[in-house]
Amino acid sequence: QQAQLEKRDPFEIARNYEEKFHQDLSRINILPADAYPRASETIDLMLETIAKLISSGNAYATDLGSVYFDAQSFESYGAISGNKLDSLKPGHRYEYSDEGDKRFHADWALWKSAGNRTEMVWDSPWGKGFPGWHIECTAMSLDLLQNRIDLHIGGIDLRFPHHENERAQSNSIVGHEAVKLWMHGEHLLFEGRKMSKSAGNVVLIQNLLERNLDPLSLRLSLLENRYRSQMDLTWAGLEAANATLKRWRSNMATWGEDEKPLVDPEILGAIERDLDTPRVLLRLRALEKDTSISGEMKRSIFLYADALLGLDLNRKIEVRPLDPSQQELLQLRAQARNDKNWNESDRLRDLLADAGIAINDGPEGQSWSRI
Image (cartoon, rainbow, N blue to C red; front, side):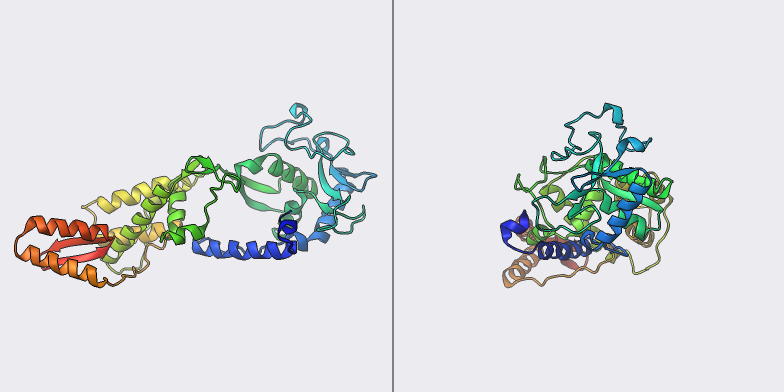
């Protein structure tokens, strides 16, 4: 549909979004995967996988050129979501609207007949068509991960029917539990609403950059929340996270130069308890304020936490020089301090703070830093 609207090749559109996706991954410190398979380039693999499911009795082809998975052939269907076949009724959202040739209402398409469709279709033993929604994940993951997948991650909305159907397909192919552990992240809201194009509230990494926010402020904001819990992201929260990153990086520079991380049992325990990242951040905030712990030890523990969290806490802070008007305010304040004109000194401090400049008064005079 998007290709028709833009009058562009669908593969061109896909590559454009793919490039932006990789760029954004880098900006928020997500390590690149070993492989990024494309469904459009693994059609032959999908056809082989579908043929295996037909041979094993888990799928059937129809006279109309489509192939369906026989849901009733997989006894443990519903193990992920708790849904049972005998309680699923026709018309549920898992059902495709134009599948009148399937035997059972809960069966799903592995291969769809092209019908009048002319783009993104391929030849197959059952006629020209295109793969169903679920088979591509089974075919590519089993091939790349050699039939055993340690961890399968996805949003909570994919638990049913997508992951339920994927599990049925994969297990039917390999004859055992293909996935050791399924993990599902809850929905992400923005300013109290589900993020969607129709609502006009989609926020991109580029939008953070336009507001002079570090992209890692998004990463920190997400780490403030348990992955199992719904999160309401806000601009205020992102700005607070950005300020926290600046403060921690500034502190790291004052806590010494040691590059050796120190394992912290409390942080390790929180990670081992179902990735309790909010507890890790609470620990870091407590350490930051703890006057009984040396700066060197704080730095070592923060380095350890950062190796887990990926927030670049040891990044050197780039200090922008003051512009002429800010330099003048700074000089006027220094003069006011020398003259013991405390009211004027405080007024100028507030003006500098409004400009994003924090003043620190010490034995050797005043110093400044960016807020």
